[in-house]
Image (cartoon, rainbow, N blue to C red):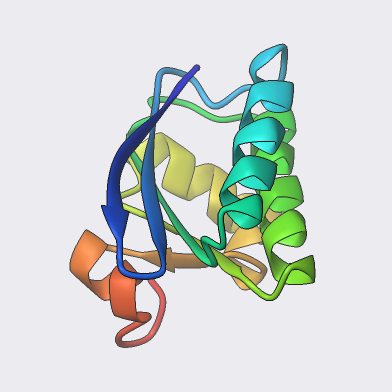
Length: 116
């Protein structure tokens, strides 16, 4: 799993995750990045999951912890563009009832419409 900051948006950033969304050594990198963004005043983090081929519960846990860090700081984490496998994991674990899931970046930016 590789995490990259793709671009900045008015109140936050867009991150992309490339590779399998599994737990492991990248978890600490993700948390450090989220803390750094919070320290810089970024309140909205959008995570593009189009290149995350698969996910497991540990990988989803990484997103949940990032979501909790942002929420505690008055921010929001939203995900969008889920691959079929990752979308399936979100649904069977019911993570989509915790983290807002959107189909497109445009929808995720404004929280427009019902989450997917």
